[in-house]
Amino acid sequence: MPNLYINQFVFFEAPGEPSMYARVTEIRDKTAVLKTLKDYSSGKNAVWGVNTRNREQNFAMNLLMDPEIDFVTLTGTAGTGKTLMALASGLTQVLDDRRYTEIIMTRATVSVGEDIGFLPGTEEEKMGPWMGALDDNLEFLAKGDGGGAGEWGRAATNELIRSRIKVKSMNFMRGRTFLNKYVIIDEAQNLTPKQMKTLITRAGPGTKIICMGNLAQIDTPYLTEGSSGLTFAVDKFKGWPHGGHITLARGERSRLADFASDVL
Image 1 (tube, rainbow, N blue to C red):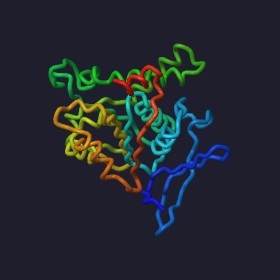
Image 2: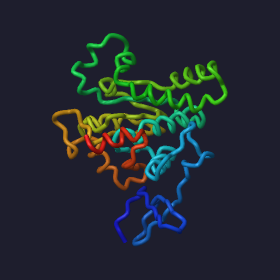
Image 3: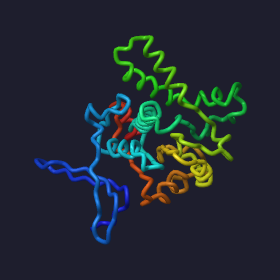
Image 4: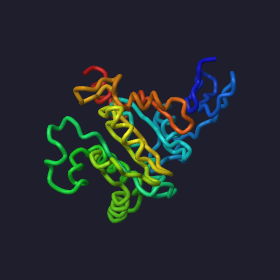
């Protein structure tokens, strides 16, 4: 039997046979206890109007929606759905389930040439230029959820969503403790192992941390795929019962984006 880790996903697919998807919950000597997954690709299990489109996305959503999992790492190229899934599951658990009080979003602000201090405005406003990805995804999520509510309903939904998402700069994280927060760390491939430790150790009781990144897109000159804090975290958390990692393989953005990822 291959070496399995706790929270590793296993699947069986064969033509003409029923498929099986499960997660390892316990390992006893030579046997593993498996737990079947919730199917988030079916319409009735949509998360904030979002359905998963492939096997790895469904694995990821099972980790994101599980209250027993405190730390999730997602890696994958552009367009694999990392930010969208993290936000959709965060909004559901903040606004519907009341499991967390708010979403805190941060990312490594590198490679833009100017330090955050040079930009005018508050911390939130300064982070604005780096948070385009957040705006794109929120636009998509608000469209899907506003159903028949019309323009007013959509505006109200947007206002509610915005009030529960805080954009923070990493420069101000040290010394803070997050209680009952849903924390998304984007572009985590640009963090050093030390920065990663600083961020993850901010978590207080009831907080869940999602680290996302694309190891093929490291913008910092002194980090490589091997020395990135994201690789470090994935490796160190392997097999911990309250953490899980998924590598998203299939782009779901567009045929143009998929082809560009492959050839450029």
